[in-house]
Length: 246
Image 1 (cartoon, rainbow, N blue to C red):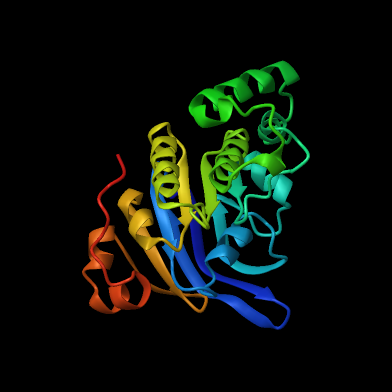
Image 2: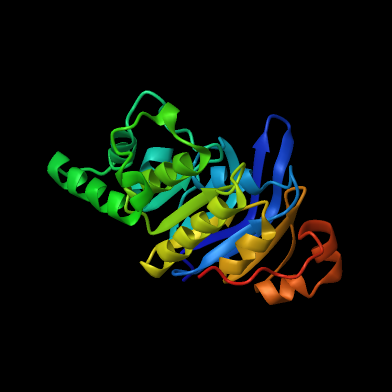
């Protein structure tokens, strides 16, 4: 049984279909990349999985349980955490407080345990340790992204949804972010990744799906996607795949 399965999924905003008969699977332990141009439906796919799109039909299941009609907070408790595009860190809270909030939806977990787990996140993200008392508005884009990912990990997810984690970041910081993504998977969390930087996404992904106007165009392992000249030229920048992130 796949960890996540979408079958014939349709998502609507108003009168228009944003996702059209979309099917994909994510197996436990994978990093899967969702690629495509702006407006292809990548972010909507993550929002549909998270329960943030009100009008969704088709099959959408996590660990065998249907997510259709579930509220976002219930989906989080099942084991799915969503790190949205734009980071959305609270500017008036400290780094530590922002990370701590990521565990607020976990029932029966004491404040002491959450504080200990926040300490563990600050060890995992050492660049944030010296900034744990800094307010969100003082952080750089890369620091904000790390806070957002750490906050997502505080939900203890089986599946982490990442939406454009490299957006607006300098190349060296992008490499650091993708090393973190690879390490998250090595520690046992499955990742579904939406990313415009196809080179970096496919350097860490096990498989990829390319979307076009809400429908699946093609899928496969990174080497298979790069070997398709039309896909490479139209969606992947027409270059050779980047070396794997170490």
